[in-house]
Image (cartoon, rainbow over all chains, first blue to last red; front, side):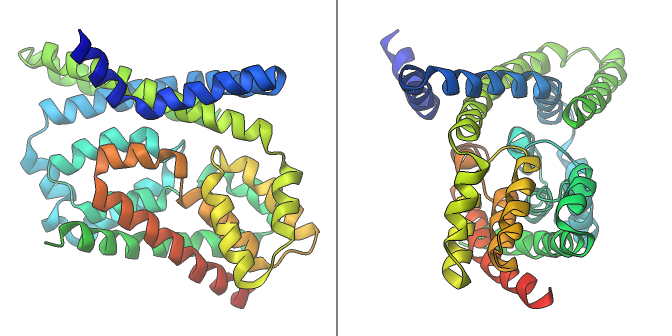
Length: 168
Length: 162
């Protein structure tokens, strides 16, 4: 039992610290802190379906999908095609990237190239559904140029991250 | 709204995958289910904690507070501070654009605003522990450091081109 508690504390240190911060703020400034935590609940509910799907997709990939299949589509041999798939997928996805990290982890352990995953995360910075809103506030030229740079950066950064991850 | 649609699309996709596959072969079903549920609970705790921090940041740091702080700086110092503040700020970028507009209206340089916006979407300080756990030390350190320094270059490119 003691071991179990200890391993729980170790596993969730950060989450425990965050809870303590939240409780402290609730005491110091109940009104603002309450609104913030309420927002967190709404965001959670908003993303609940995404999170359920991510967990079940990751489970499916880890238990069912053969390694060769992932390797072929997103592995080393996929070349520029794999990287482009990552870049386009990252561009089109919405919601926070970190919700998908467990899924990315499964993909890498099943043979997806590190650069493909890093490029996907890089391109995640492009928020397609928000582009019209951004243009309305900041102008067409500014928004398009910014997102174009992010797209190019995503592809280059994927290769650099892969180089350092694989460095012996 | 977008997240709900995205969730629905992903959910239907996942469900059809399960229905299609496990109709033929039930042998791995319970193992896959157990693993997925365990993952869901773990992710929920971790990600909810991040949402709490985002919610608190949103309430305690107002648009004007962030904007007025960044307006004090320009040039390379402004870029680096925009980069740092953007890295701390998280949550939907929809709340970042109004800050950017506020900055532009008050005469901030293109490079400072760009560094702030780029860093907001590319670096998430609060999700770094999660990235570290799932994708490893080297991946996390390289990706975030690279992003931090590249944002400075990208911000300068924006300044030159606009």
